[in-house]
Amino acid sequence: YMPWMQASYIMAANKEALQYLPEGADIDALTYDQLIEWAANAHEAAGEPKFGFPAGPKGLKHRFFQGYLYPSYTNGVVRTFASPEAVTAWEKMKELWAHTNPGSTNFSFMQEQLLSGDAWIVFDHTSRLANAFNERPDDFVAFPAPAGPTGRGFMPVLAGVAIPRTAPDMEASKALLAHLMKPETQIATLKATNFFPVVAADLPDDLPPSVKAAGEAVAKMSASADANPGLLPAGLGEKGGDFNRIYVDTFERIVLAGQPIEAVLEDQKGRLEAIMNETGAPCWAPDAPSDGACPVE
Picture 1 (tube, rainbow, N blue to C red):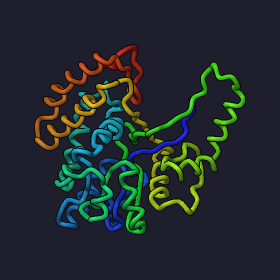
Picture 2 (picture 1 turned 90 degrees about the vertical axis):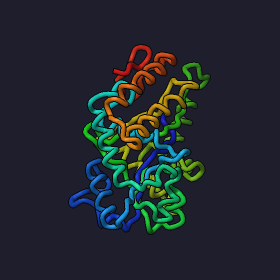
Picture 3 (picture 1 turned 45 degrees about the horizontal axis):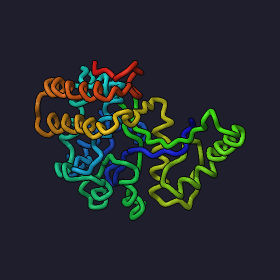
């Protein structure tokens, strides 16, 4: 089984906000503490909070918690759900929220807030940022997600190709796979699908600005020394929505309603355990593998 193409979730900012980066910060290697400080600086300069987060009804906020925040602070997502490290992660989320446009609870496609100026620094899926870069390519910059104590958590969205052991012509099948892996084929796939290369490939100049900007950010993120991929949830079947709801409810109770972090995590832990036991879904990265259902430790 070989990876074929990838997308992801990244950060983007209005270039106006770059002057407020913390001293010594590298935008391609930010930490969560630096992101919070940057958002605070922008908040102070603008007189209103300028971080934007897709917390609306159609926003992909659950993927931030599952693929970014939890892997970066706990090196897991299910086993570590109610861990002391998870408490720290939610404390950091609350700190960031203090500098987040409160209208974020209605934001779902952050390209809109970048273009309107309602947000200067945002997180979202590459496809939901594309219009901002295509309409005003000189005004915005794309960059990797930040890192926490357990690495630079990010969620690669991978599509792959497999050769069954029973394939009638193994050599021809491998030749096709090798062809799909060539940089020029990967670029052709990118142009056709907006999904990015999984091999090192120099992006040509005739790509849409959004593809070039996001592609470079994804490449930097996945190649970073501290990269800690948090995979899409797997094995949950029809319970996928219930699983996502656990993380959304936890966010709403802790960050929006101000409920005590430990109490919320302990309460939600039982719901998460029930889903894992009912589906029998084994752990996925960055959680350590499990025999049978992934335990909530």
